[in-house]
Image (tube, rainbow over all chains, first blue to last red; front, side, top):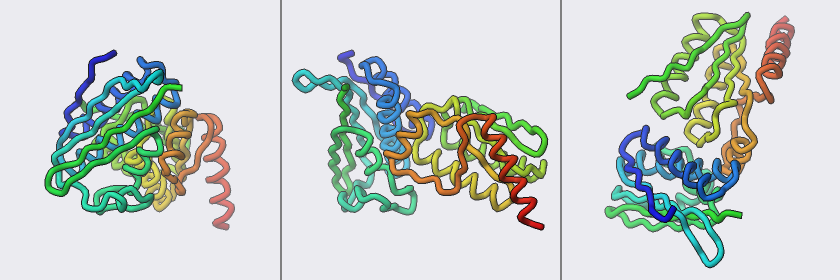
Amino acid sequence: MAESKVITISSDLDIVAARMVARDTARALGFGAIDQARIATAISELARNIYLYAGEGSVTVKEATNGLRRGIEVVCEDRGPGIKDISLVMQDGYTSSKGMGMGLPGAKRLMDEFEINSKVGIGTKVTCRKWAR
Amino acid sequence: MEIIRIPILKIEDFLIASIQTALHDVQAMDFKDSLLQRIYETKAKGVILDLTAIDVLDSFVGRLINDISQMSNLMGAKVVITGLQPAVAITLVELGLELPQVLTALNLEKGIAALRRATELAVHGRV
């Protein structure tokens, strides 16, 4: 379970592929049905952001450890336009013309840890983790 | 791309569609269009959208279901969602998605009962 899986996102089909990999990995790591759904849904939101705003990017899924804790880590990366105001897009209900206004804050709520780094003109990287209980 | 048609069945005045696989965006949009077309063709008074087999519902598909309900309503057909799994219901709420247009029922049987009530009320309400 140590190796990571990388899913290239370049079409709407890849969004489903990414969340299936995330779900299968979560199941293999011992997450229950509800956490599997949380993780798969969060990844679906993040992968859709890549597809909508950057056109293409990648989702990397792997096991995470922190002392005795085991969990899942998902990194969503793109070289898209980047986000000018991260605090704005993290607000509930904020929506761009393309979005539905819950992708990022919703995904954050579904995961335990959530970091976002973005530079305008360079790209965006979201790293999120959930720990098994 | 693999084309998966979602069968839309008609029974009495109602349409029943059961979504059995994870929908890609394009499939989901196609489904919306064909369902609305079927409502128009069959003059259905109600629609059951059975999601028993769906284990992940993200904001895109959630929003689409809300839109389908609103659009069907405009055409005079009520939509009832049936069979949401506990994990899906929990995730939708935590995600922050509200589905104000959507009626729900625990299962298909209760969904049909709900549609019967909703459409009878509509008939009597019209006078």
